[in-house]
Amino acid sequence: GAVVSQHPSWVICKSGTSVKIECRSLDFQATTMFWYRQFPKQSLMLMATSNEGSKATYEQGVEKDKFLINHASLTLSTLTVTSAHPEDSSFYICSAKETYEQYFGPGTRLTVT
Amino acid sequence: AQTVTQSQPEMSVQEAETVTLSCTYDTSESDYYLFWYKQPPSRQMILVIRQEAYKQQNATENRFSVNFQKAAKSFSLKISDSQLGDAAMYFCAYRPGANNLFFGTGTRLTVIP
Image 1 (cartoon, each protein chain N blue to C red):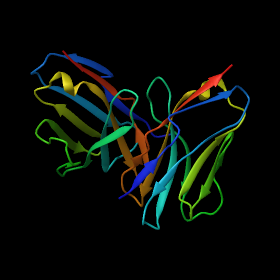
Image 2: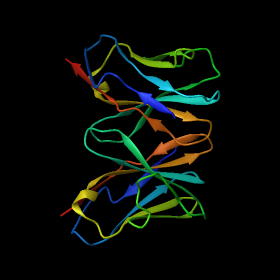
Image 3: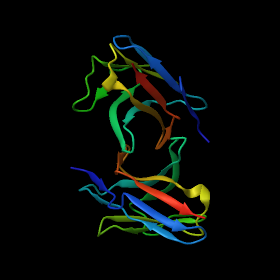
Image 4: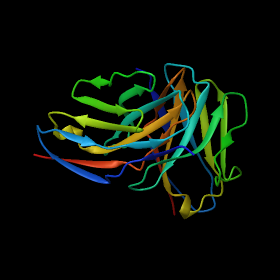
């Protein structure tokens, strides 16, 4: 089956620094990738949708200048959390779409101290 | 607005017994898909079962089956012969056409040995 990887699986960073999370589709090309945020014991909240070669579409309430998304190739999308603050601590999940199916990465736990 | 409602925050089932998780959705679309995802403690999202709205026949995957009531906009998941490995968060999800997924709030399933 299709595999999506995320790196790193967990990261701790200091307040004010930036951190980049990579999402890769390992065995298929993904024209569309999605980034979700999940708070403890809550559902997945869609942050943005990115299409290869074009700007990401952000959901209402998501700061595009804080959460920079780059979908540079058909197999790689990155999410950069800029000037991170403790309230950005969360679990971030990416998903890649192949034709009609959507496959999820294992997630990245971000802790901002 | 498209919404997915899971009215059971928590459910429990005795090992080897059967449990049904409820899900209702609201949509004005005619072409859509419904999904159940499982999120174990590892937090990897795993697709359990998929239902195309145009299909009247309920989807089945081994011990997992759905009861799809299109007119009532209901999409419940039945797990038969429950196993300890079934313990997880279960999310109902809706997707209009080829667009992104909308998730419910989830149901935490506990399997009692």
